[in-house]
Image 1 (cartoon, one colour):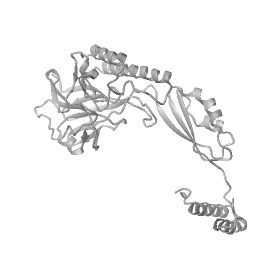
Image 2 (cartoon, rainbow, N blue to C red; image 1 turned 120 degrees about the vertical axis):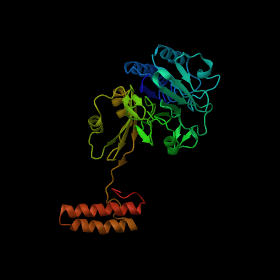
Image 3 (cartoon, rainbow, N blue to C red; image 1 turned 180 degrees about the vertical axis):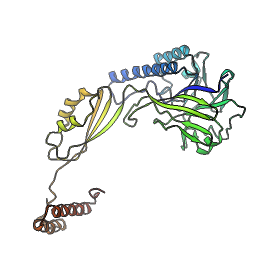
Amino acid sequence: MTDTITIVHAADFHLDSSFAGLNPQRASQRRAEQRELLSDVFALAERKKADVILLAGDLLDSDNAYYETTEQLRQLCRESTARIFISPGNHDYFSQSSPYGAMVWPDNVHIFRSNRISGVEIPELNLRVYGAGFNRADSPAMLEGFRAQKDGMVNIMVIHGERGGATYNPISDEQIEASGLDYLALGHTHSFSGIQKLGETYYAYPGCPEGRGFDETGDKGVIAGTVSKGSVKLEFIPVSRRRYEIKTIDLTGSDDHMLTITDSLPDDTYPDIYRLVLTGETEEAPDMEVLTAAFESRFYGLQIKDRTSRLVSIWDGENEQTLRGEFLTRLRKRWNAAESDEEKQQIELAVRFGLAALDRKEAPGA
């Protein structure tokens, strides 16, 4: 019997996603890479000598998973020395026709098939694993009224739900605090939450193991470590092979757009998918076709967005017979009479603020 449990906690793989933003060949490649990523996580669990693997929902993107995906998942489970607990989520909710219901799973796998919380005891680990699962695309609050047994066992729960939400198994801070769990392994949110604590209960979202779009940028991974009665030693471990990144590049004052972009990029970008957002005031609009052709080979996927504006003199319109023209004419006279560069800069700033007010735009620096 042990009171220290080694876990790997992962969620939101969304295996067999459509990857609609990529061409069919790249989308198929990304789905194959997702299966490889799943293998990486199971290999991590073996290296960590995990007692349990907690898969907190949306492991599959839908119930239309490819045969290769479900077979690989079953084989990885079969070869694993860990006990595996799956909490179906809103994308891969349990039904008799789903892969969770229609397939025969290895004995070391437990799938929580009901939206009512139940527990599985593992006496040799002094461990009880609670869980529940979606059985449709939405779910009422599963954690409402739950209290873990107080008998000296380590109590862990794996569940898919939205903290502070309303539709997908809403979970409140009060429910977490009152649960009496030692660790609550959550899924649904695609960003790592940090290891948090409410009352005596530690909880976390690992986020997705790899981003699938520009709303899932940066490092992605899983949580691994140990859970004991009343304490945890857990860490976030990046596992993603590709990253989505959004980089903003200011072209103001650039005489060579291509050189400015080159100087702004990290050295190793080929494995990743980037969106470059070009900003600033330029005399000429960036040539998007030329820039895309020049840089696309440096990335697995590349989007370039032009958010620049054309550079216009602040004095344009000073001779107009309008309120704008009168405003500019008066400030121009003061600018011409200025006795220092500092005074001229102050007048130019006043002009920009005034024009912003006339045009109902944000003031510079606001």
